[in-house]
Each structure stands twice: as C-alpha cells, then as structure tokens.
Length: 436
Image (cartoon, rainbow, N blue to C red; front, side, top):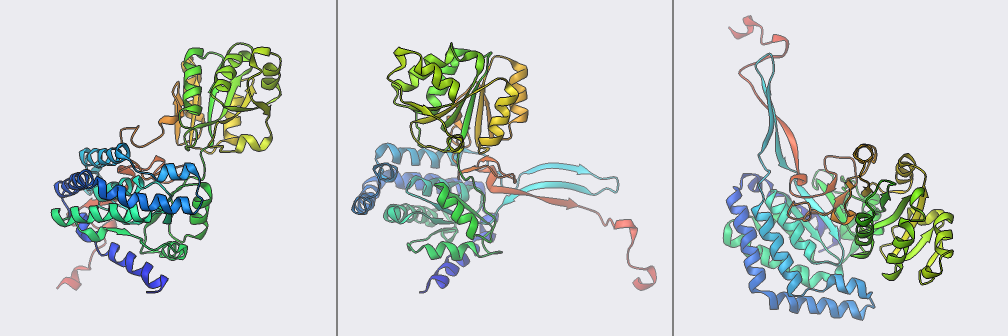
C-alpha cells in the first residue's frame, strides 16, 4: 500500500469510531483503562522483550545514551504506566458536562457542554510511556487517537497498542479509536498533517526541531510548545533558604526536561549574600554558570569559589533551552526589570518568583504571561500528573482553549446548547395566510 493510501486508511478508521465514542458511558471507558492496566501488569515480560528489540536497534544506530535511557522500560516504568491508566480511570469524565446554563428574556435556555475534540494525531519520540498516556487520555475523553511514535520504539509501542486493543475487545470499547502508525516513513506524518476536516488537531511531543517541523507542515490545527526557557527570579525579600532549595531542585533534579530552570534572575541586593552560596551549591552539583558581568565578578573575587565553572554569558545564552547542567544568570535592579527580562527571553512555559512580599508575588502572577506562574516553588511541577490531572498529552504554550499541561479536560472543547419552545428571532414566522 502506498503512503497516501495507508495514511488515509488509518484516519478513516479512526474517524469512523467517533459516533460510537460519544455515546459510550463512563463505566465502559473506565473498565477498558483498568483492563489495559491489568494486561500490562500480566504481560510485563512480553513488553520488556519487545522493548529489548528496540534498545538493540537504538544501540546499533549509535543513538545517544540519554535517548536509550528514555526508551528503556523496566518494572518501575511499567508500574508508572499502570498507575497512569488507573489514575485516568479514577478521574471525572468531562464529556457531556454542562458547565453553565442561563435563561434569556425570550425564554431560551442557553448553555455550554463539553464535547471531544475528535480525531487527535500525536507525534512523539523515544518514550513508550507516551503511548499509554496519550491513549488513556483520549479514550477517557471519547477522542479517537492516531499514535505515531519514533521508529526507535516501534516494537514496544506496537506491543502496548496490542494490549489496549485486547482490552477494548473484552469491554466493548471500539478498538478502531486507537490507531497506531506502524510504518516508519516520515512522509506518512506529512500526509496526515494535511488532512483538514478529517484530523481535528495534531499534538507534537518532543524536541524543538520535531515540533517546528510538525507546525510548519500542518494544515490542521497544532497544539504545541517549542521550548521551555523557564526563569526563576529571586527577589530582595526572598526567604533565602527556600531560594537555595528551589533553584537547586529546578536545575539539578532533572535538567533535561522542559520545565527545568534555564535562567536565574537575582536582585542586585543579593549579590554578596545569596549569590556566593547559591553559586557554590550549583558548582558542587556540576552546573556550569553563564554569568553577566556582576555575577561573574563576585565568583572570580572569592577563592573558595574557584571550583565553579563560570563563563561570561552571551545574549544567545538567555534564549537557550540548555536541557543540561547549564544555567544562565542575570542581575536586575527591580521586579519590573525581572518581568521585562522574562518577557524578552522566556518561552511562556513556566516562571517563578521567590519572595515573601505578597504584593510583589501578585504583581508577578498577573504580569508574567506564561502557561504556569509560580510563587515560592520549583518550576519542575509543571506536569499533568503533578498537578493532579492524571496524565498529560504535553504542555501547551499556545493561547487557545488549552494552556499548560494538556490533560483530560483540555482534550474537550465546549459547544453551545440551546433549549427553546418555538422562539423566533424578531417574531418573524410564516405569514398567517401561508398556513391556511
């Protein structure tokens, strides 16, 4: 089968399930997710055998150690996928929820109801757990999903989808609603992205190059975030103990993810108090510091900080998503300047202020235009599971119906519903003589 016919066939099968999905009751959806979790638990050895094939292929292709680590499944990661399925099953079903009703002077009752987006195409790399996260969220929200993982994980992803389909057949959930792209050609992705009216939304999940490629080639709507240049501002009225721990956690706990901090902004009054100790802590953790002139001068002036790798920051450094143990540092003279810095260099993902001043905290929350804005907490919490949403399809920095973690509710959209009793606009109806 040629590429275009293959792509059209997958989309057509997914779309054919939409009317059945919208009429499914919550019990069937939950039973299917819990059955998938049960099968995943029982078939661990099968999943790990298929995963071993992918790891062997990844090594033969010379893929990085970091990518192979994201690809690998062990019992702990399988437990994590099982937990996602159970967590999503436990969440309230948003489909059909009427969020508001009001009555107009003419007696019309107008309301808004949550409905599925439709056919969702998710393109992702390496991590097989995305297969379970994306499928479970789409199934619970009555969306059909097209799953296109990277070729380096094709055996693992195929095995996971087989278990989902087995669960569907046992519970009465339409298996056609979960389609897996089991061919590696990139041209299939480009074909699907052109299918206006057949694919309702595309969600790329991966590195900036993947997301830009999807956005630039798509004719269907794309929910995306290009990168996570997250900022933390340490205010002059910060609790410094909190600041040390928060900055360390946001940079060091897992530096290779989109919600790790990349820019540290410090009020000038803290240059000789907070900064030397913070630099010492980060240096001991192996963090390379890219500093402005003032920060660098402090480090160079203190012999006890000679172990720190610190270099002058360039303009480009403040725009950079390092995804590594590298941190750019900037001194500012005011909260206003810190907010302006974030507006210029940030990516509207996650930004934080550390302060004990309520007025400053609220100004930061109101004026920083990002998907997640924190006061006295690590940016590392920007995640659907951490926010109590069960799981996520990715993080959206777009200004559309969904912003931040794309979880269950964000996979629905609202439509207007209107109940009447024969109301006519401006009371214009059929002329009486025509009714005779």
